[in-house]
Length: 70
Image (tube, rainbow, N blue to C red; front, side, top):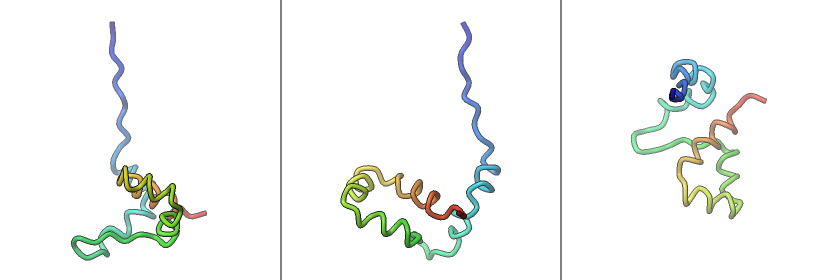
């Protein structure tokens, strides 16, 4: 019986695909995180704030979604 090996996405391709998000990584001073205005406005909604409060990783997902060129 075989087993399933999940193919990991190449980290370089992932960073290139999401470069609109990662270009801000070097700008923030140590200990700070830059947040796009669109993401900050999402936190004004109480349900989004509760989701962020229980799972902080959702903030990065929202930041990537909000910085995509539309």
